Image (cartoon, rainbow, N blue to C red):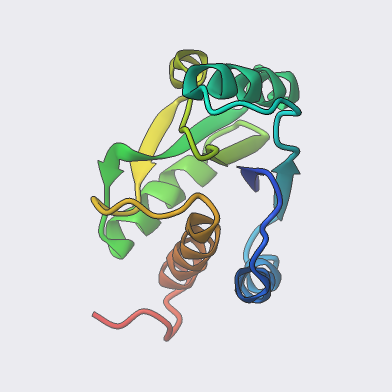
Length: 156
């Protein structure tokens, strides 16, 4: 199964780009992985509902019907790193061709995206910027892969 991390808009911080590149490269040793940047909606507004709906159109246009969509959402299910690795192991054995982890924009997700999602995961009860979540999630996905392989990255 191919795993992809989708995010809205480019990252503006070079330190995040550097960290993300490190974990993206490491992940390719464990599974087919790719990062997809969905261009930000080309509207100028501070209306959260309008922005969420415009972003939803862009996201839904890229999803395939059989994609397993996982939202990275503060209200999602929380895991320990070991539990997340076991959850990933179960998902990776699925017959679907692609699993998409989605980071929403600054205003979160539209109701249409929540309805389409197969799962929701929270990285923390804390709120992080949607740009920082990219790096945090890549590290956790890498950690999960090393746990599944029994490698010496995660310490219990």
